[in-house]
Image (cartoon, rainbow, N blue to C red; front, top):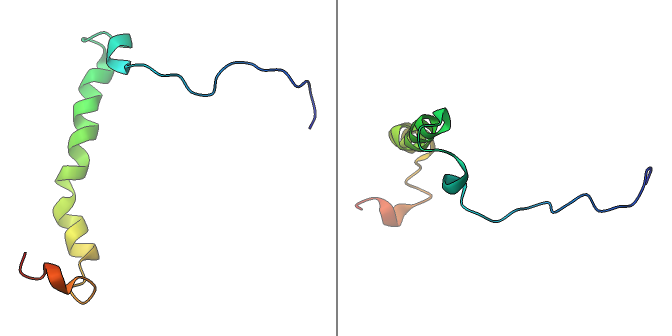
Length: 61
């Protein structure tokens, strides 16, 4: 590899992001939108990917 071989810090950090971001920060509003988006697409994904031949045991679920 090119360059020096020195440690620059940890790749991951552990902690709770909610403790780092103030409650009134714009990211807090975005979190609700991002969390709700997959739920609003559930019916669409079911329509696109449902194949009862692949999941016959779920037919009457």
